[in-house]
Image 1 (cartoon, rainbow, N blue to C red):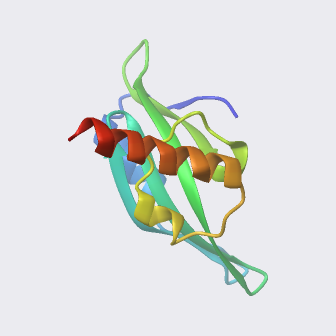
Image 2 (image 1 turned 180 degrees about the vertical axis):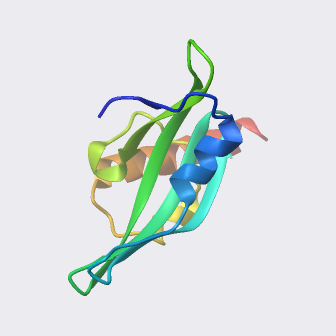
Length: 118
């Protein structure tokens, strides 16, 4: 996926746009259960309902200021195996696993951080 920019948007506006809940005409929905930022990486656990099936998944959104006036983001999710591993460990238990290799990378990232903190 590419980058999405909004003219005149602030970083806060973009985060609000990403985490905002949406209802769908067919009775489905999309909502964010939890989110946090690690630098300019927004992590979120989302819940969506479609065709009476509820799913939980982890979203990774890279945030950046555009060349002109406004901020933007690049959306990814766990299944894409993003090369970003600062996802909070607690989020792994909140969503169905779609990429075990990426999850192993997240656990390793936090283990290295803990080790350096000693």
